[in-house]
Structures are given as structure tokens and as C-alpha cells.
Image 1 (spheres, rainbow, N blue to C red):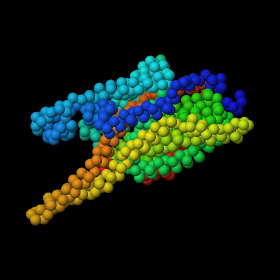
Image 2 (tube, rainbow, N blue to C red; image 1 turned 180 degrees about the vertical axis):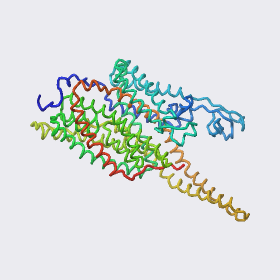
Image 3 (tube, rainbow, N blue to C red; image 1 turned 180 degrees about the horizontal axis):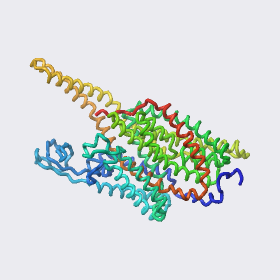
Image 4 (tube, rainbow, N blue to C red; image 1 turned 30 degrees about the vertical axis):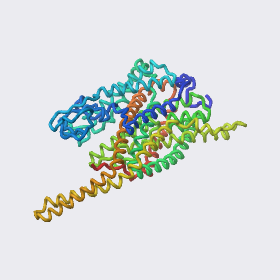
Length: 600
């Protein structure tokens, strides 16, 4: 056996399944289009058209009938006793004691306090059905664009969707998901406090079981098992949520981006070189195997391995084998690392997020691990210290780090192409064209950037106007609270009158400031609704990613194909230094940087 394939049984390797041939639109461009379409539809609320408000939202539950609801209040059924009527606005008191104000259609002039008001709407289960059919239509278009077997794709997608949803539903069971502060609310004595995102892990495990123990059934799902498509679409949609969060805390978001960029430069310089050296020096792999292996293990999994294989003109089997290995270890990392981060890094949330981005070697795995870590650490911080971190910042850190990795894949592949053409292969007259950077560039990152920037541009002026106003309102409210305590404590009528006068003056100022920023506050409120509606689909695509990653991780088949020595390199590099260097770099750049804290 020559050095070209030393360490791999080439006869077995060649029976590895060929990649799915895509004569149609690439998954990269398809994810860009799907994500952008959902994003554009979510923006309808800015023009008064609530196009996605019927989407399903799942909460922590002890009674299954209360778990599901519709994401937009405009589509939600309402019933309660009328408290007041102001024009078309009706305020009602619901059975749980909470008040809700809604815009009622038709003639409400005859309504009076005490009357029962009921508005029809979309039930929780029906919202899931509507979400499913909407995605089924989108996926039918996607199947046509990919030139896949449309019928098998839709059958597989339907099964994948409902199995994944059941897993996510189970993950939101109160005994699994509720935090300690919610125990009284659900009237339960204990809970694991794993948050609802534990449903992602259940979906992953379900996929692993089906993929490895029920090959006949998994065969029906194979056509729809496209984790890269799902996660890339989710990331495009997620850009809008992160754009909103960046607008709300622009200085922190900028800080994260800068630190993420620095962390990636460090990781590239260390990870790739060490992995390539170990594969060549100690495991005697050829350059053809070592370069894609180094990219797959150290940078960004499947995308990097495939891009590197193309850049150095490796045989197709090389990046295929590396990619298969990546999927297996991503599944293992996703199960282990978020819980390790929760245990050891809950006091350094953004270090944990960056670590997920640097350590987990696929877009889907890293971003989803960031989402799980986000939920786990927020739950633990709340339980341990009572601190409530804003949701999404740990995920944003992991995503930012991973996005910089993705952005550089094209540049890295271009550099390797130059090195291979000019130094390694040195074929006379061969030139590397700059357009190869574009061919390697992950197109879904463009979608992510667009949704991020559009929401940032929309929300930044409003957020900038609100920040000083909210700060002033908070200060005035604190003064009002102090004066009210003084008023209660004093018995002097004159002093009490003076205090009440001061309180009235402060309340008038609060009302004036609130009125002056009413329009920016409305903009931010509408933006939150838009991102919430898009987030329904982001969560579903995340969920599909977890399940299908498990589904395609066929351990037995890969072992039969002679993947053992490649796995040895992966284990040595990943657990020997990549995870730990990633942790050190994360701590170096993100140590002491904390997400915003929710005080209300």
C-alpha cells in the first residue's frame, strides 16, 4: 500500500456511498433562499400584515393541553371579563387573573365592564399543523430545486417533522425543563432544570437510535435527512434575531464580533497546522488525506473538508470519509460539551459560547450546541445566583465565532489551492483564478449577514433613542418608590403633601418621556414580534438538524469502510489539544465579558 492511502483500506473505502448528486440548486443557495423568504414574510408586521403569526410556540408544561400556543397575539383565542373599553381596544381579565388588551373587530360600543368577551383564534395544536403544512410547501419547492425524489422527500420530511416535534415536546416536560424558580408555578417538588432545549438532545438520540438500529425505517427518511440544509436555513433566519439583540446592546455585540474575529485567527493558525503535522508525521497520511483531515477536524467539519478537497483536487472519497467521521464526532460533542460547559463555565457564559463555536466541528453542531449551552447556563445561573441573563447571547457568541470560520473557509481553500498549484503539485502553466474564492464561499453566510444587518438598521435608531429615555425613566421610578416610602412613613400633613407633589411631578415627567419615545418603542415591539415569528421556523429547522444528524450517523457502516485510523487521528487531535486550546482561546478573548442581565 502506498503512502497515498496509507492507514486506510482503500478497497473498503471505495465502497463508501457516493455523495448525493445535485444537478439542481445547491443546498447552500437553497438555504439562502428559504431563510430569506421566511425573513421577508416575518417583516410583514411592519406594514400591518401579520403573515406568520399563526406559527406554533411551545412552553414548559405539566398539563399537555397548555403546552402549545400561537406566536402572535393577533391569532390567539381570547376569553375573559371586560375590564375597560377604549375605542376598539378591549381590556379583559382572563381566568388566570392576568389582564390582556386587544383590538376587537366589529362594534364594541355595547360592551361594558363585567361582560364576557370571547375572540376566536388558532388553537395550539392547529398552529403546529399550520406550521407543518407551510414547511411542507416550502420543502416541496426545495425538493424540486434540488431535483430530489419529491414524493420520497415529502414522506421523509413529514415523518422527520412529527418525530422531531414529539421529541421537542417531551423535552419541555416540567420535570425536565423547569427551573427551580418555576417549581411552585407547576406545583412540582423537583425538576432537572435542563430547559426546553433538552428536546434537541432527545431528537438527536432518537435519530441515532433510528439510524443505527432501524435501517429499514431510516431508509424512508433518507431523502429528507439533510442536516446541512436545515441548519444553514436556520442560521439565515437567526441573523434577524441577532440583529435585534445587537441593536438592543450594540456595544456588547460589537465587542463579541471583534473578539470572535481574533479568536478565529488564533484558532486557524494553531489548529490546522498541528492537525496536519500529526496526520503526516505520526500517522503517515499522504498530503491528499492530511489536508482535508486537518480542515475537517480543526476548522469547520464537512464544509471545510469538502472545500479543501476541491482546492487540492483530492479524490472524492477523501472528503466523503472525513465528512462521515465529522458527523459522528459532532453527535458525541453535542451530547457532552454543553453539559460540561454548564458545570464548569456557568459563571463565564460567553466563554462557553465561544468554546462551542471553536470546539464543535460543524455549523449545525456548533450553533445548536451554543443554543443548548445558552439555555443550560441561563437556567443554572438563575438557580445558583438568581441572575437572569438575556437569552441568545451565548448562542450569538457561538454563532459569531462559527460564522467567521465559515467566512474564511473560502479564503482558506483559495490559499491551499495556490499552495498546491504553485508548491506541492507545481504544474507548469496552471493558474488559480480568484473566482474559486466565490465558489468555496458559503452562500448562506450572505443571507445571515443580510438578515442581521436589515434588523440592525431598522432597530438601531429606535434602540438608540430608547436607551437614554429608559435609563431616565428607571431613575425617576426609583425616586418615586423612595418618595412613596417617605410618604407612608411620615405623619406630618404638610410634608406628606410636599412628597405627593414631588411624586406627581416625577410621574408627569415619566409620562412625557414615555410619550416622546412611543414611536421608537413601537418599532422595537414590532421587531420583537417579527423575530419571534421567524424564530418559530428557526427552532423547527434547528430541531430537524439535530434529528437528522443522528439519523445519518451510521456507526457500523463507517467502521466497515475502514474509517478506524482516521478516527484515531480525530480522537488524538480533538481531545488531545483542539478542545483545550479552544477553551483557552475562548477564555483569553471572552473571559469576563458577560451577557446583558434582565432586571425586570
